[in-house]
Image (cartoon, rainbow, N blue to C red; front, side, top):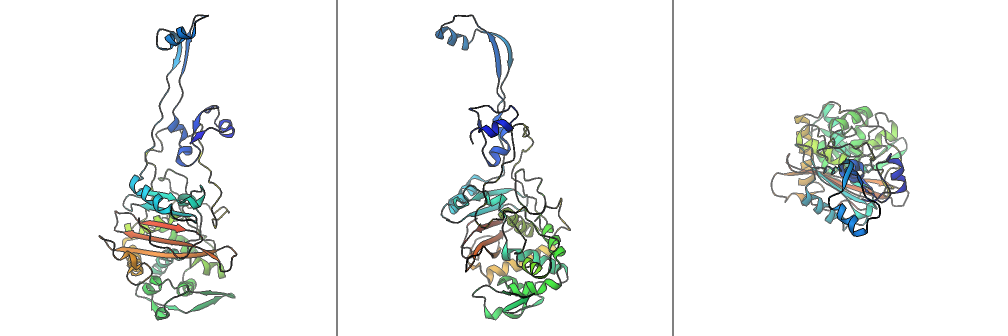
Length: 398
């Protein structure tokens, strides 16, 4: 927060005056009217010619009040954030140079326990507002659509080294294990993130089915319970050719924020769609007078500057407990045989995870967004971490 700008004063409709302190971003700006309270007014009679000392004496009592409106203190904003986890997330990101974010939430309630954006985001709320291609973490959505078409983690899929669609060649990440090429289980293709296997499924999984699966996991839908400005993802309902193929590996026009990624992972952990919540008392004060939803700062590198399609009002057919169990089975394989073996030693319930990278820009080689989502039980915090312009994600504590 800071001193009100001329533009804020003009837009406040008289609620703000020069010298007033007001919110300048985030929740502080969005709920400024509630937090600021209202000023008081007092009209009193005073004899002419009083000395400064006599006037001070009147201010301490004894003056004749003609009219008075008492000031009202602001109403504190209550959030779901866990201060220790929030500080931990910020401390971790403080060492990361590129734009970065961590979001942690509790699946059982949807409570957002941490939502931090690193200093490399340059003031942009990467955690809640970022719009980035999710890469292979989107294979969670693909897999749900494939399961709904009759497949299971043990179903066989074809994972060639390369695949050409309408003249565009797709390949797996560098270092993809040769033992997991060819005819493999869906679980194995997921654990090692075989791009070609999931692109191969494009003929059996329509773009509309991808969109439906995403909304079933709480992605690309409105978040009325959140109480804060956020981007919950965007998955086009129509795409064909190379664009549909790219959607199968979380690129093309598919976009997510770290909050959306954590919501998706949380829905798997819970076994039903998670509705994220950050502000517990959004209606405690009047946020209409003198308050506006904070406009995001300039997007960090690689963020989408275009306007994503409006989110759906509500999720599609909700993910079921059986579907979520199958997805969690495959996410567990990412820990036991895939890219996140470092999570195998986490105490307590088994950790399940998925990593992903997505290329952006025109550099050669191109820069990448790196992602990881992880779940730990159903009441603890699944987290999503996103780092721009980096190599694949390194271990993140959540």
